[in-house]
Length: 257
Image (tube, rainbow, N blue to C red; front, side, top):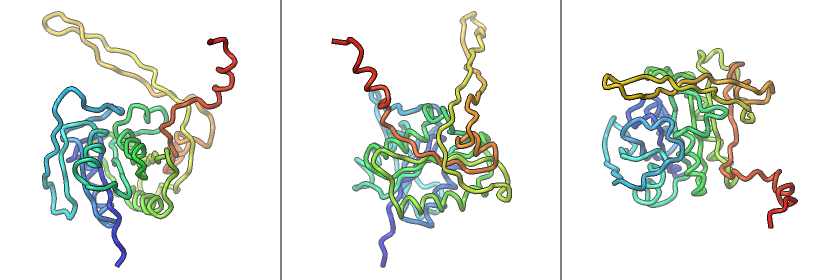
């Protein structure tokens, strides 16, 4: 009998979010699943970890399984760390994070708790994927994404990923029949043009709400933004080595000694 792969499932929207419940059900059809996910929403946490307060991981049961589930008081990166060191007993064969309620394409990958969980797994040498659906609503419909999520996960289990590489997968919010397929992409050059909405409390103290508009500055047809706008699922191989290798030679020419 072929041994089933051990799959770690996590997210940043919280363990009860419909996206992660969908991801759990998909992974149950592939392997033995252990869920370690935040006990509350952790969107936009990036790669934050808990250093100055206690961390809890409580075994719970939200549905009939067969997965084992742990609700963690920490961040998505914390969830992966504590899963590897305290819960699983060995490194999983695959870590999947999501399915996020909302986009993590382009520059959003920097802020994403979903992708930071995948990156944390990648740092540990575990093949990892972050999945996101371009629908921020709690009642988002994940049906169209299911076969693609399963296919991508199975292919990563089959082929593995290079050291230092994780996959950032974004799924357009369109009916299943309108998804044109999967496209391998690069990260688009885009950013948020941000403003702060300044207000006052009843006591007269200033406070701020961050607002902004996402601006795509990239006209290329090989980007994740182009793929998503044109009905494709984007798959971007992402690396956590932030070294600007192309600049090392020029930097060495500076008079820095």
